[in-house]
Amino acid sequence: MSRLDGKVALISGAARGIGGETARLMAQVGAQIVVADVLDERGRQTVAAINAAGGQAEYAHLDVTKPEDWTAAVNLATSRFGKLDVLVNNAGVFIGKGIEEISLDEWNRLVAVNMTGVFLGTRLAAPALREAAKSSEHGSAIVNLASIAGIVGSQLDPLYSMTKGGVTLFTKSAALEFGRKGYRIRVNSIHPGVIQTDMGEQTFVARAQRTGSNDTTAVRQVVTDSVPWGRMGVPTDIAKGIVFLASDDASFMTGAGLVVDGGWTAH
Image 1: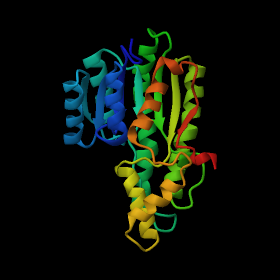
Image 2: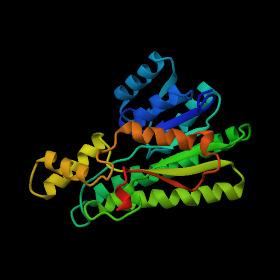
Image 3: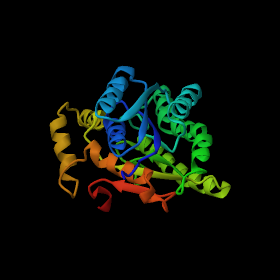
Image 4: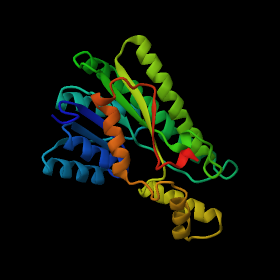
């Protein structure tokens, strides 16, 4: 029996990167997947690849800042696959600007995606997750993508850190609220280090620009050298952690944060 046999999962930001790899891995271990994103063509390609490999997936257009998109995505999961067991709040954006440089519009965008999107997903998926939990021995699960920047301060990305810190504490608070209400929905967060994705590349560009250079190679090497394990992470590293938190193997975990950073926060 595979780790997610019989589970139905909705993953935001699942067209590519960590979300795309999570969708593929979850399908490989038995889950039926709703791949949700604003990148429609990439999202449909991810779905096609999952289905071609023998999995079951559907695509939903999802702007995580829009309640109506969340409602439609949840409805697709329940109508197509009969229920919703797992929500992965993966969608996020990075704006590599400091406190004095960022515009209000940019700040509002950062908050809308990284924080409001997680709140809306949790709120609007909760009824379906609660319903599925009634017939599951170990309940349902929400996995929120936070960051090591949500655990420790960031001198280079303080506002991104602020949003991910919000996700970290929201995770704990949602776990407590759902526990108090008897919903049987576990809520945990995962905290990646620097991962080799499009967003990871954006962090290198932003840091290079702050030094008056466009040399991302040097920045990448500095980051790599700072990781005790000796390499940067890849999407599969994080996807495996998400699968664990979504599975019944983590049935006594809620309100917790799983750090996957090659030892960076051990400094």
